[in-house]
Image (cartoon, rainbow, N blue to C red):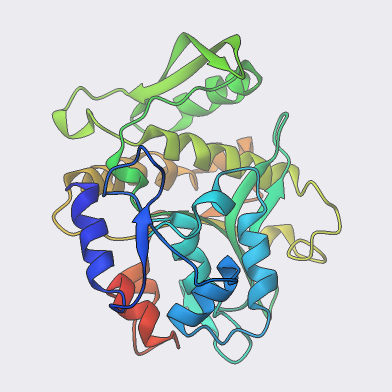
Length: 311
């Protein structure tokens, strides 16, 4: 599956009067962004095109785009993962709860920062139920199409050294050293790779696996801001973690990532791994998909959003 195919499909699902341009001067047609009307701010453009009627839309837009990543720069890009999460999860409310794994969530936040070893771990979406169950979600769209060998700093080394042997059948191994550059400075760190030599695991998006581990560490350590609303007053025994992806049909990269995720992050509820993370986080073992979570009959979402993403 090529990114171009997905972008072409998204472009075809937009109203014909929506103007588009390449995301940058050097980008190919596979990276297109929406052009706001004269005088429009980006959140106003999205509200107009997708008929968003969320009362705190501007606040949620700011949450989703003020993180340390490229969200603000790329939020109008058709295949933006941040845009996908924002358009779908911003509609969660008391009147429009979203049910996942039998729990109905009524509140939502974006780009919540939790502590890891140095910089924060920014998790895409946080949901909270009326019973104070809290679900932290990492969201992915087309990232899985890109294989990656993540750069991991030595601050994480001891955690990985203890963690990886605890995963049943040891599907993941670390490779040390790996030398990489960050802000022009040479850093000695390490990376991870599948233990299996099977071809299906030869082009994995391993950066996503690394992100999940960082997020879970962050859930154990807690928020950067102790007054972070989604954390206030919660029972730490009710913390859960999940990954949601846009389900791409007939896509080998997506299928391989699903399988490898189940063998790695999906095993984090074993007793030994739970002890390593202080029995604080329950992991939903399989990857969720936008198609199954935002089913038409169970959640109210503007038709413009459903049509755009084919939900």
